[in-house]
Image (tube, rainbow, N blue to C red; front, top):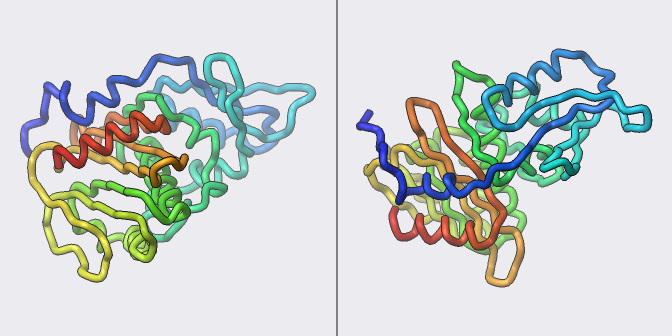
Length: 260
């Protein structure tokens, strides 16, 4: 491993620095299922600024999770959907199969955590923290696939991951059959399969080795912008955020095009 960058003021990390402070919480309402599910949710966000709470409300729906931002309910998700997509699965579900590509598959209380800074650890330190970023990455791929046009930029650190993970390879096969302009970035540790209709950008500088980004910009005039930005601050430890703000997504995309 190379020496970690300490001054990242003019790198992808500067976009994470822009995230505003906010009060964000996930509230489990009227639980009827087992308490360990709430424990898993608390563990997943234990080191984050997102707090987890549980409430019993006399007029509320059973087994629902609320995303509360600055005192207001932003969206809701059933506990069943949250456990099926996040609490009771691991990252291999998304790497070995083409899961999570439908927007309805993803818990809205998780995809709604945009403009929040996360510090996540991968396995074995944590089973759930990094899974959140994997889930959002697949969510963005699904949006690009459904739109069928626009520009999509994604980093893999090592380009071999495009062929090593069956679920990932399948998604990029499908993207190649659309009009999406797909650009992939990473260290060239092995050739990218020639049958994949993608533009390859290979490099070895620090940001190639320490960055994780997934950026989708739809055609001009259309809605649907989204970008995930993460930087590795130590081995398998990431600082991250994602955004739906069109201006910020465009800036992230332009930064990638100009610096990778």
